[in-house]
Image (cartoon, rainbow, N blue to C red; front, side):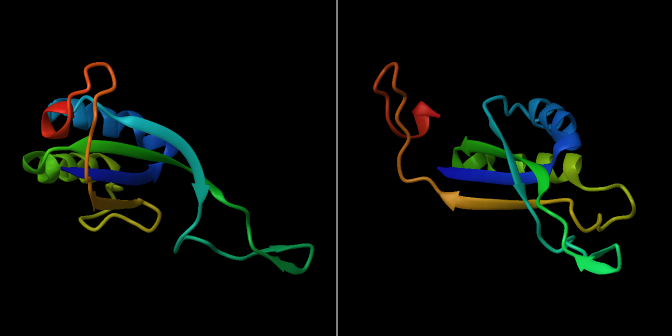
Length: 116
């Protein structure tokens, strides 16, 4: 079992959801977050350098069984990557894959891969 966490641009959420649904991945959690990475830049305001604040993003979390990891990641990349060339552009986001030690369905007490 793995937990896939994707940080994407807010306006790409609908595209990512549609791509995941098309890949038969329907159980997701979405949170509004803020941050910045490489796309952070300096601006000049009234003659002074100013570093802008945090950029609004969306965090999508998906718990999947091992056989769905590549399918899920491919669906996110396909939908979240900017279409300005094959490589996308700075600010498209990141995907993190972490081991998921246990999953428990509260309603039934079911544990492990079947609880996902």
